[in-house]
Length: 353
Image 1 (spheres, helix red, strand yellow):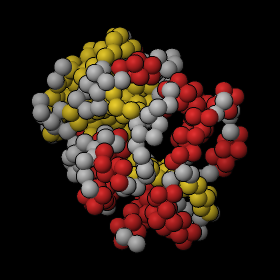
Image 2 (cartoon, rainbow, N blue to C red):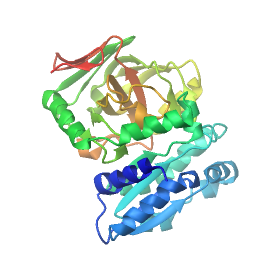
Image 3 (cartoon, rainbow, N blue to C red):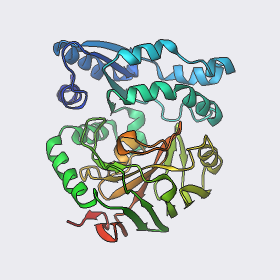
């Protein structure tokens, strides 16, 4: 076994999920990630906890959306709700064999299922949880790398001093934590929002692994301005490119894209909260420099910020509710600023302390 798997699982079990004796821990993922899943299983047992291993083939999701009838799409899995309520920690392992396996599925089907599953997602979000991406050929291809290069990229981003990352984020929040107004300017971008009364949160490997961001939920009706995203936004394997959004009093006033614009507009209209911002985040992991079409890594890139349409964070005092939470990344490294109450905190991708 790759020794980096052992090192990564120890971080996931001890730092991220903070597993304790007697706890129930679900490990959810794909069979392609079996080496890492089994090592997690072993590490959890060594902690005296109770692991539940749930590995499901990728094609099962495709079969569900292709063949499920309306009553099956709308069925609420009470067994999953029961188990989720009794689980203490969730470790999710990504590991795509084919990042486009849901590309032909109608977005309405996925939206409907997301709405059904939201109560279970909310239960899980109240527990300890962490997401990790197991390096696969499919993910390596998305990032224009060989598998070996992508493995180095993933494990290099994970195996690090997370206490040091936490201290850096605390410095960032010290500069912006009491700000009332945030403004982002850049290429075809000038957008502002109030964060008064909202709490800035740290992300240093507790929920996302790798990690590296500070984030909050803006006041819902305060968002005004326009933003253009250089990087594509990915949804269920579909790329939406060159997105431009305009906000007025918190809501999306207009939306356009070069590719999959219809999908963009359908998702914005998913429910009452999907056309509002649920998050603004600022990347703090300067060890991640390359965009790899995977949000777990891309939103952490130092010198970028990301804004998410849809559901907000209760922990940040956000109130927007939606089945959607879709992050889109703005690159500020080649000309852009973030200001807090008219004071520049980041310029051209570098923090100003």
